[in-house]
View (spheres, rainbow, N blue to C red):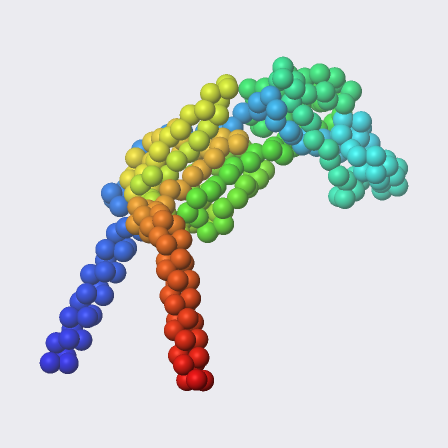
Amino acid sequence: MFKKITLCVALALALCSCGSQKDLAYFQDVQTGTLDSTVGQINTIQPGDVLTISVSSSTPELAVPYNLFSARGQISSVAAANSSSKITSNVSYEGYSVNSEGCINFPVLGEIKVAGLTREQLAKQLQNTLKDVMPDPVVTVNFVNFYITVIGEVERPGTYNFPGDRLTLLEAIGFAGDLTVYGERTKVMVIREENGERHVEVLNLKSKDIFKSPYFYLKQNDVVYIEPVGAKAKSVSTFTTYFPIITSLASLGTSITMMIYYLSFASRAR
């Protein structure tokens, strides 16, 4: 009899485990082979962005005027160039803000149109321009404000900053510590604002179709929201609804108990 009960319990646990795994697994319809997907989206520079741009050369002193150093960094760079012909590694860079017209004010070169360019395109454009004034120019461009916000049922909700120009939804979720067991994997919402309009797309992490969505690759300031599963939402709602009632009943029960105890104690004292 005991063996039969043990077997039934083990079977029930196995069935529950299978059901749980099916609820939590991603890409359940994926098979071995190549998946169709959208071309990896590279974010372009837009008005309101902040960039860091560093210029270096085999002749370091010629690159100094084209770098936006802080006052301390500029002094260190000039001193290093005069003493050892090398720019120090502790130079701090300030950011270039892209104005409403899509331009930045670059040292020596003045105003430059950058909106619509990728980081790589802007770097190549500056390198070609600087070839006339210095040998072997190397230009590095990075975003300062590539922020993605991940909220809802994830382990570490928050706002994350990425230095690159391409980020997938899966990478953003990974930075946030993955979904909790209460995260609804079929309803992952991406909120995006473009040209003053807010767009919302709902993606299904259980389906391979997610790789075809233009929202699979995120853009600056996208918000990813993970909805809770219905069971958790319902339990939270039920608890919120009945908690005040339960608290009131408990308080009333305590008062009645204390009154009964007091009356009993008083009658014994007589």
